[in-house]
Image: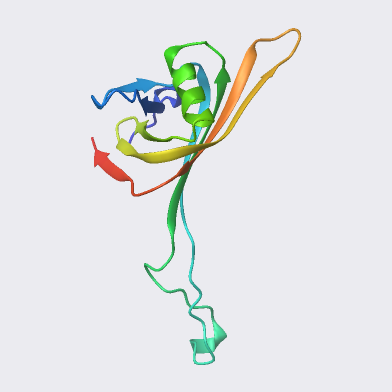
Length: 138
């Protein structure tokens, strides 16, 4: 895969109308998508050379998304606030340019707003996966 522009990594949220329509989160300047798995230690007294052994396929998979940007007062801002304050597990997409789309349920775990006297209002958002994700390759 060739180098890609960071601005082309998109975070999208289902608009909740039941039409499977996604809107791009407005104002994001940085976004990060992380996939992790818990490891299950299967080491015992019989482990060769006393080296740790991990049990394949036994850990819990999870994904997290973080982003930061400027507050735009766009439709996506209102939808994020609604999801956060109502504890909604929304359907989200992360679009990785020239690679594919990761989609699934996420809960907003953090939504921060801040402003400095001589600067714009900004926000930070953190999401945690809340179920199985799908990946669609381009």
